[in-house]
Image (cartoon, rainbow, N blue to C red; front, side, top):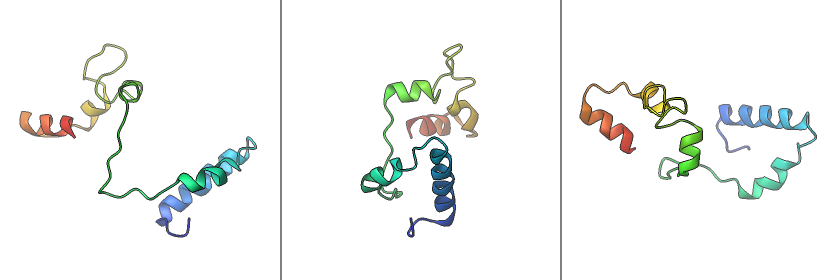
Length: 88
């Protein structure tokens, strides 16, 4: 935790405090061996089910892009920019 940026260390401390309320504080100590820093050189791959559950590309009510996370974040000014954002 000492090598984490201050905001990340605070977030980890809050998570630990929350987990301890449910007697799950030790879960992070077991998972610690699997934690590794995330850098800009790495990508986060999300499964199709995760994308659906998080409503990243389509909202779950109507199945349309309107109301999705992509729709919310898309502030591009051209169709090309919008397509580029979707590919990312």
